[in-house]
Length: 96
Image (cartoon, rainbow, N blue to C red; front, side, top):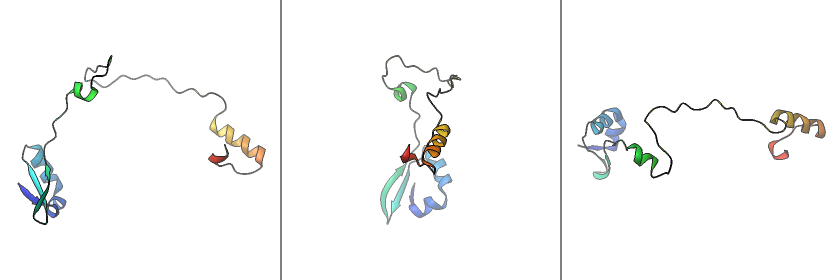
């Protein structure tokens, strides 16, 4: 199937469905083929992760942890307030 860029802009969903169904959609500009729309093949897990040692995935959503970041020292808000007290005015990020 060969279409112009104008046709693709007018109905992109239709042509994406066509490509997803296995059809090659050739896109033209000024009657010259400039691109081809194809169905994407889903990469295998091993290809996505590469050859990273000690890494595996069972295909399920990761459980994840509930650890919250810990702050060391004063919070940003406390630092800004302290700088304002010291300088008697506003504080910008470059001043910290």
